[in-house]
Image (tube, rainbow, N blue to C red; front, side, top):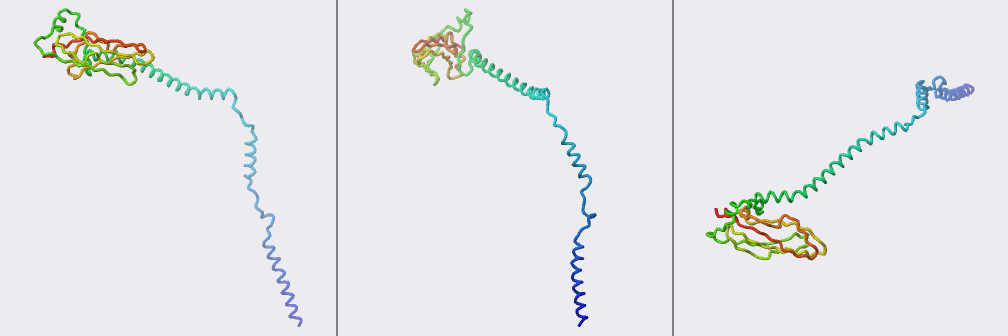
Length: 236
């Protein structure tokens, strides 16, 4: 019976030793514990060395110089914008004042746009004799008149006569009546045109209120004359 018990004890010994061996295998020797790489400490020292330096702040002189450099382009740009704006305003004002006289001169010299030509050659006696001599052999021409005002002008502007009949070379006088219907003084400028346009070069004004400023006091009514003739060249 002894042998079987001995074998059992050996069995127990074997079973006891296995966990020890297994436990030993799981342990690690201190010499095998991984160490941190040497450069890690070096990097830490470098980082500490870098960040340990005091932070430099910009001096007032440096800040002022930077602000001055940034301000110069902006100031130049503002100056250019101001210059162009003033030039545009002055050009607009000059054009508004000069457009009416310029338009008046061009139209009176060319009859463009149906504008009557203002005769400036009547200082010569020979010219007067030629142009202001009625052509009795011609039939009389019927001249009709009409008037209108801008929507923003509080005037009533109407011709005193509906029509007149004249001979070529014969002078005629017509009147327009203007009434200021507002409660304040108003300045207006009249423009003048003749239709059909091909007749305009032969409708010559000796005296007219057109293209001239007319100031009417509140409620004032005035008569405005148009002294004209039809150039005998119209018959040719």
